Structure formats: structure tokens, C-alpha cells
Length: 364
Ligand SMILES: Cc1ncc(COP(=O)(O)O)c(C=O)c1O
Image (cartoon, rainbow, N blue to C red; front, side):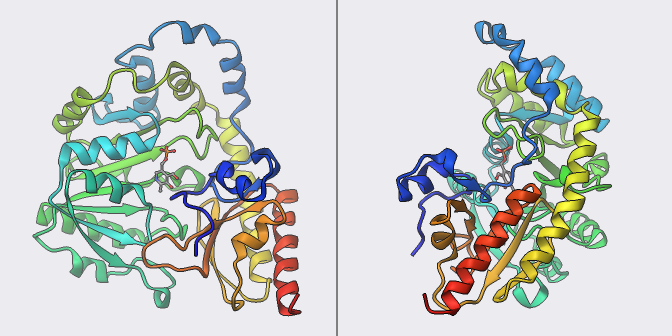
């Protein structure tokens, strides 16, 4: 049985409630947020901008769109910004209303919820443990003319794996040939050094939609900002017309104007991850009973084979919250995901895991 009802990581309120403690007393490895916290440049700007709360944000968000367009070197008519990437997912699905959609499992839950709202039929392409959870060219055969839409998540959540570039290109070509809308969720792409993702291929490929989030890399999940990009300007304009006015608050809009230019923060974050992900990966791999897959993102995915272990519950007793992946279609209670955090916190996780698994093997 799953311990928590929440469909996502990061629900520290619910988890803390299980123990009867304050959420601040939990060390949260279940949400994949940059542990550096928001950029100092943004914190200062927010502290000095309280007066923004007293007037409406620019309903057209001209400065925000300009910043996003400049950052990605695309026309701003290719962009729709939203209250987190989640708003962009729902806006896209509502506007395109695909009749039949292929989803990759395991994958992020919100595509399915948005698709259910427009009554889309959903078919699944199951990633396989035998393939190390990697996307394979078997997906090409699963792309058939009766499909309207395919969602891909690169790097995938929860596995953290990036598909092979040539395969991604082949998938995009096949989608174009068959008239399938290809939606590529790059929510965690900023964490991967030297990966431009699919944005450079948008020109001339109006079947392609890229989703981006700023909440993870820049540690602003409470502020909320994300966007979509496509060269299908007509459909982007239609989505903007249908969008609820002022859905992005003035502070989030300001954040978008500031953080994309903060090169020091970006470099420091990539440097931190280059040190900490390999450290955490090796430390997890050294824990007996765990099988860990080497994802590229700021989180790691693993299976726990110790019989009868409820790892999430056991770690919670030590005030550590990890993501159980039992509610991902295609996975079960043995699978977990942990965010990469700073060294002291990562060490705490490893020590707690060692203790839990040791206690169990000794029958305590
Ligand atoms: C793969 C993926 N896409 C999108 C989102 C939503 O991001 P946002 O916080 O920008 O709405 C998440 C959040 O966990 C995610 O994991």
C-alpha cells in the first residue's frame, strides 16, 4: 500500500503529517529542486519589488517574452509562458485536443490528467527494465498513422535517462511523416551540461512542441514559471488567446527576466551537479540490495530488492522523504527516486539507507 496519496514528490505537508512533525523538519529528496535555492540576484530583486503586488502585471508580459525569446534565440511568437510548465501542458492539450495519444511509461503524471480532460484515448509504450529503461527504436514501430500525439520526456521522469540523439531525430521525422504532434518535455534539460535539447530543431518542424520549466533548476516551484515553444505560430497564438489573463504573477514574470541571465548561478549549479550526482550514484550503488540506473538529471532512480521493505516509510522515520515510484504506471513498490542534494544531505541519505537496510537484514 502506498504511504502517501499525493501524485507527486514534494508533498512534505502530507508526509510530515504521518509522523506528526512540522514539514520543515523533513529533508526532502522527493522533489527534484536545485538545493542551492533561488539565485541571489532574484532574491534581492524580489525583496526590492514588493510594490509589484499592488498593480496588475503586464497582461502581455512583453519583457518576459523578450527575455525568453532572447535566451532561446527564437521569435517570441513561438512562445507561450505559463504558471509553471504545468499550465503550458494543460494549455497545449486543451488547444490541440488530440484524439489518440501515445504516452511512455513510466512517465510524468500530468500529461495523462490533461489528456483525460479532453477525452483523448491513451495508448502506452512501456519502457523495459531489460533495456535499462532506455527508449529503444521499438518506439518507431509503435508510431502509427492513427495516433495524433506523442509525449516524450527528456530526460525522462523518473528514470533521468536521455534518449539517444539519432533515435530522437528518427522519432521526430516519423512523427512529421505521419502527422503526429510530438511534445517533448525538457523540464530538467537545464541540468544537463552542453545539451541544447530540441529547441534548435523547431524551425521548419511545426509538428514539434517543446516544454520547459524554470521551477526546478532555479528553485522557484512556489513562484512558478514555465513555457512552451513551437514554430507553429498560428496554434501558439490561438493558445495565447485562450489563456486566462494574468496567470503569471508579477514576481514570477520578474524572475523570468532575471534568472536566465544569471550565468554565475547556472555555472555553479552545473558544477555542483557534476560533483554530487556521481558521488550519490556511487554511494547508492554501494548500498547492498539497491540497483541504480545512471540518469543524467538531478535525480536518481533505483530499485530496492530487500524483501518486505517499505523504504519510504522507513526513511520517513528518520525524517527523510524520498519519492516512492509505486504510483507510476509500469512500476511497483520496489522503485524509488531521489533528488541529488548537497554533500552533507546526500551523506545523511546514504547513512539512513544503510541503517534501514542493515536493521532489516539483521531482522530488527
Ligand atoms: C517532467 C516534468 N514536467 C513538468 C513538470 C512541471 O513543472 P512546473 O513546476 O514548471 O509546473 C514536472 C514537475 O515535477 C516534471 O517532473
